Image (cartoon, rainbow, N blue to C red; front, side):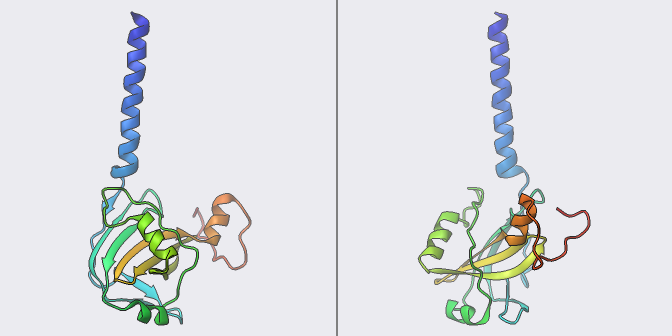
Length: 175
């Protein structure tokens, strides 16, 4: 009898822990970002200035628990051809999955659009915080997506490799 009771307690504890971990990863830390309506979508020009582009239908989520949890969706009427001639493109970006409940951000579909040339990725802000770039992907039909990418300096810092001369100085006490 004691063995069955202990086994049941262990199973219940494991179930509660599993449900708690799932909830913490998918729901607990995310918050909706309140849009400013004026500077939520910015791109870096070819000469290094940041400019706000025209956008509508902005939705975003973020979490303080990680610098790469930011995701946003929007639409723009600015033609992709205009954006490509004006703003710095970003190479090597790969959209990260968003929680399933944030339905407008489908990382697989965005990645397919990028691979097929139907979407282009632009620099929003390099080193938003050390090692993290904000990027914006915009499709031919005006759908836009924003997320954070770990850049080369971030990769080196997080895996312990020596930082190169091209990396900015890290703030004291920073990661």
